[in-house]
Length: 412
Image 1: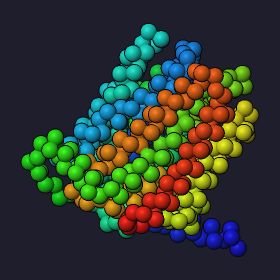
Image 2 (image 1 turned 90 degrees about the vertical axis):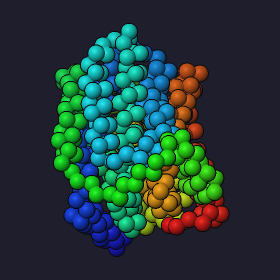
Image 3 (image 1 turned 180 degrees about the vertical axis):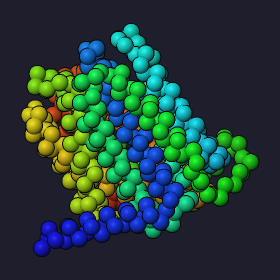
Image 4 (image 1 turned 120 degrees about the vertical axis):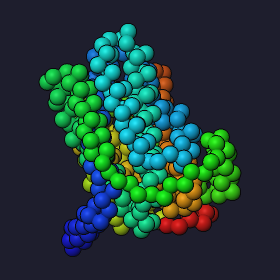
């Protein structure tokens, strides 16, 4: 009986996604562009970590590179929101894709340890543009969609990210193993060319009002808005807790420490990331009944328990792959639900700025997580202990979210 309920709930949700794509042509095209961009991005991601491990760099360098992927978004976020609210979205999206193309193709010049500084700069530029693109798209959605469609759209967005992550990581692991990292960088760059072609003739109809305010005054205005509406700050902070699910540095160190003698580095990276991403894809299909203000508390707790289980089986490569699916199972729902709550509970005037600050907090958490993984590893703490600590953060997130629901007036 329960299996039948899951089947029909899953079928109903899939129909919602299909209906959304049919009725919203802008969302449909942006989703295709998103898939192409993200799919290509994971080619270079596996290649970068494979290159680092072949260079035999320290755990600190691996963690630092992982941190840079998110720190770039933190640096530009305070300015990007005001910029988004004052520039037409299509031109901005095209410009950001062009920046990502040039920073990606330039990764071909990174050959050895002497080129690490160049790698750091290119990652900063590439990921700053990627974060800017994401913030622009997420602030655009509430402008073109009714609030009733935001949750489904955010879930679809996250599923596309996870699906491209799964395929990208798995295929990239194989291609890097067969042909080397340079091929991955070229393929990634070509994906940006394709996305430009798809985006170029897209018509985005939004009411665009140029305020005439300077970026500084817009930033000050948004800070006043958050002070007057503290629920927005709490919703941004609870979304930031999802940033503790950034395991890139941990996975790279697991491969280097535990699996190097079992399987090729690129293949191990690809399989571990792909299995977790598979969980990200199927999670919303199983967690519909819990996707509400009461149920999300339990999803936070289950996420923490899954990470603890991962810590327990970490040294076994094959068991780790299996548990990675469980680790990813809850993340998509946490991400999409908390993001939707924020979108529903802020004024339209501040969409770009508040979404940018929200992404800044999320990326700060992700950058801090990556940095601390390196610090803990440097001082001799086991990877199992690091994963256990990361699991605790989700327990804290569940308690915090329960407090928000009780004390803040928010629309669910």
